[in-house]
Image (spheres, rainbow, N blue to C red):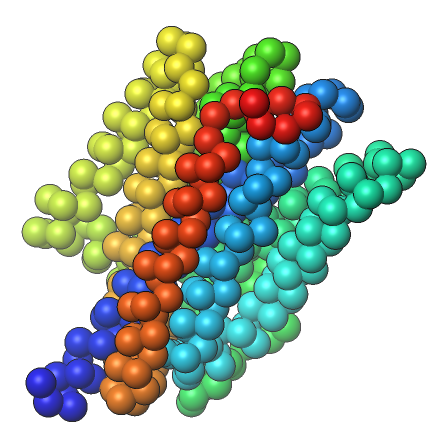
Length: 338
């Protein structure tokens, strides 16, 4: 294959790799951030301890995918990284501080029982700030970033808009839903009953948030509307809201039937469909409305070299992640896994 062939193909491959890493992060870190958001609603003692124990073996490894996604953007699309980071500097720093604070609270909660109420608050606050900041950053990216030449052309607070705040609230609700359904699957007794009640309310709120964000997105940019509604694209894109509707009905039915695993899997399916919708809106742009993946791509030789490393590392990460989830499968109590 020629260098020109690489230049045409590799940006698409790397866009898929980064998209996979971001979605893997949402799937694997979303539920434990959601547990942090829900933490104040759980009773101190057995319920909170069971919730913490359910994610203790896996929570820190989940953030590997965030590193892979951010590092992949920096390495494969350096020009996009140089534009996006200054535009989203404030929410990204808030997200990182929230993740750090949450991690510290997670560890100190066990080691410093005399101040456990404080660390419980810190755990919730860190999870809430990190989640909301992620949603705001996504909304700010989707609404468009002004570019001047080859640099960010906007101001410090351009990310702060009603749409970005709506995205932040929507993601916070969605992560809380993942946390509730995870607890339905992993806990028993009063913790599970409480999580099931929360999942019903959060499910309604999440579906409403998906509908609101989806309805607003086509009005942000003419290209979004064309990708969704132009013929013949609409024959395929119309399947996404249809599948969301079917998934929502199945989700609430599974909760009503007393299922334990299906609500979590169906909540993940709703996230997956939302992610597909996001891809429909922005692809092939990496900076929506300003720059495509081909315009922002690193040299083909660099992308190919990094792709070899990713082809080795990603299966390794998937393998040890799958092994960790397999080892710690099943129900968990306040004292740890059964």
